[in-house]
Picture (cartoon, rainbow, N blue to C red):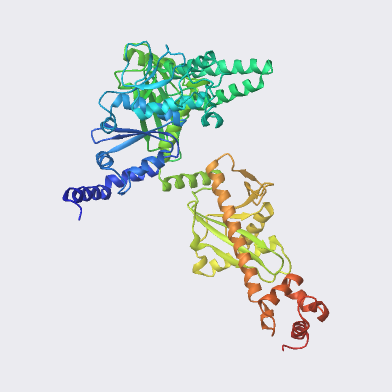
Length: 627
């Protein structure tokens, strides 16, 4: 039996996992996006207790809120203290890494600090006095002539930054000493794998090495754009001089740096004391986001979720929210980046400047790094709305949008769709699918086997199916007892007109629309019985819904058609003939294609497929009685 302490801890963790708060946090974690970013755990007093980074926020954060024995004691203690958490979405893993360092440095969370030694936050050190300097980790800066960058949040994060730089610039990470080991041995495996430029080769010079190190230094200083421009110019010169191998190397280095920094939106000296505003209007909720940059680092995120979507143009809404958000604040940033131009920008800037006692600039960037920051803030706003809006709300708003697009007086709830499938006159079938509030209601799906059809005719088939369906409604059949709010027909204007004719004959009135496909058999638009086409591609949610309905209805029809053919083959009249088993039946059907062709075949033709005795039995069955 486990010791009493372990039993008590296990019991406490079980209680935590069963609590409403744990379930609430678990649900929120599962709603996070599969995007890179950082997560910030806070206790009930709003104190930051842990900061972490993730390649995919949903996957990483969800791991904490599992009743798992794999959690360490420290992790369980941290999770037990979490009252709520926030996330900030980043554009890349590197961006998330640097942001994690900045937030840990700022908040010094309790559970992050416990993972480090007691000598403080680490720095990146570069001894520029060496002939071939390399990056290393230092506990604190020293007056030794070396350059120091940081501090960063943890030794692991600091090493991650060094590794990212070395990978992007193909700097050495092996144990060789330069210039001592240059030319003594073959380049190691890192060079052959493309991870290092092979600085141990005699063909590489010290000047080239120092040039790459200087580029790394400027990347640590945030000068991504400047380095990229220099590499581009050098690459073009190499190409003009026909040094194509060198140009290709510079191209690869430029691409690596571009992926590494993405213009370094997290650490940017020009963004000291800056707020970046984002806004998103969802179908059920809206969100106002402010990203706070201090000392060139993204320090925090504020978010205001509006339960009811804000009416009016984006500029009007953002202007109103800016006044409310900053109106009660005593401190102001030096500049506020806005997602759109607002009419009262000058007046608002003056009001905020007077309130802060300093100049506050309102800027609406159109391009460049600052515009990218606006996009990042807007992305955070979108994700907050998506997580806060439950499925029922989204579906409700979606159906409202469908009703408006189709010009209906009321929001539709039940939508029925029909499709015809045939493989000749023997297997003509139809499908009826039902969607309620945008979701399939499979218990109300229905199949139809068409009757008295001598040849395939989609229009006649649709006329028969709809007549049978709505007559059964009028006759009180419980299986067809609910009328749809919208009738969707797979096909164009003529198909929709057939449906209207059926309903008029039965004295019923329902909105009818044909689902029109493009040349690639994908849903393109809806069409009325009068030929009026309604575009749906401008609304992605409606476009996806109609496409889903059309595909599901087609799938259901094809599935039934296959079942009918399989049943017809398995239960063939040929089974009644003595001497005809599954193999001979299959051979006959494969050769003659249908029972009708077998029936009209001569004995000689039958003997070409099966033996003489069986051929005689088949022929006699259809022409001279049943042996």
